[in-house]
Length: 532
Ligand code: G
Ligand code: G
Ligand code: MN
Image: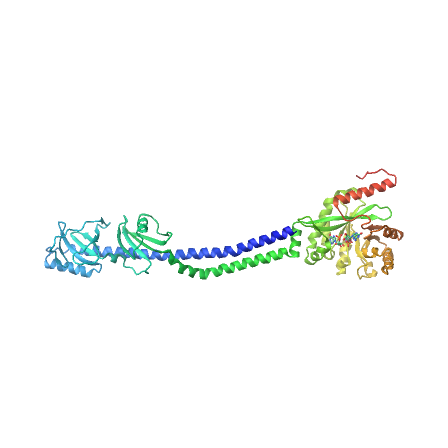
């Protein structure tokens, strides 16, 4: 029993802890994945904008180079130079236009080239056929290296920053590369190692131990956006602010349910209903003997609750709760089933033997136990007259229902006994109207026998009353020979009590029954042990 309690408590604590931790951990994890997802989606958008921007810049340069081819003007003539200047001016991404002949720069949008400048070496060729030099130190300006695109005898110089001219937060860095991973342009100094791995790999977005990244590809260009993972913190807090309270709410709910269920299970009623479900009820049998001969003529079935640790709980401690809660009905069923299983063979062998079943008030009022009896007795060859039913006055609250049940019980062949007779308030007249076969005089009256107390005279009156009703009489709680003699002298036929035997488990009762029978037959000079 303590074992079960501590198991329930341990399970409740475990479930409670899990119920508290799991939802909160789950919500923390979900907020993290949502924050990561949002962060990466944002980066992906940046990478896509970058690739679009870069693509458009290349298109602009291509357009400018294409439009330089026509109309053909005399190379490096004032008109030619003016035209190159117009185009450089009209194409925002193009800083300068140059005309090249035989690998030498002849003139630029600024004018005729005086020095001997070679065409810059080509790093790679775009899918549209533009030759690209990624780093050129422009002759005209002292500024940063620029990029040169060559096509059809012309070159345009461009500021590489134009390709990644995107409005982003400071801690997002960008890299633009060609499909071979050659870096074309960058913003906010991206991590070169990461750029190298990403430009050769497949992934569109992801993270490393220190950064998130997103990659976009288009027409031979690769745009990479990255930002430190530390940036997640703000977004994570946002998500947690929404989701952690949900997790806490679920946790409180689960812990509440666990506490409620375990309290319910640990309550006396909870334990009793588990006991009913686990069929923890066993039956002991207290012999009822014929006082004159000492023959065992029957037994009263007395239920006990056997807890998992083997201890027995007496009915006084759980029958009231069982009656109050309605669990008494299944308990009565289990008692009936135990009787049939344990004493069925003995009852079939000795038709004069009976077993008395205690009915609860609810059993008496509803009469339901009769149907259970009929059902369980069917096919067992136990005669219904071998099953006595004991009802106490507590069952007579609804007297009409009680009368109907008792009448029905007798119609089916059962004998009906009134239990604890004398302890209630009912008048004899009231009992007279009830269908019954036997009275069980309560132990409290038997106790007075031999003592000089005032109630002892009541006892003889009780016995007289029972006799007036012409009923079998069973004296309960007979403990001494003196009591037995007193009862015999007043023609009380049957007795039950410690003088004869305490309530016994079925095998012990069967042994008691056989011994009693054997010694009686022995006493009469008959053969011993026939019944065995
Ligand atoms: O022998 P014991 O102390 O166990 O019996 C206590 C009381 O419990 C008895 O007086 C009897 O009324 C009640 N009792 C015993 N067995 C049953 C049973 O199977 N059903 C009901 N309803 N009461 C029982
Ligand atoms: O159903 P009822 O109230 O009759 O149940 C009988 C009760 O009396 C059971 O609890 C049983 O254990 C108890 N009992 C039976 N015989 C004796 C006896 O001789 N002495 C005492 N003290 N109790 C007894
Ligand atoms: Mn009884």
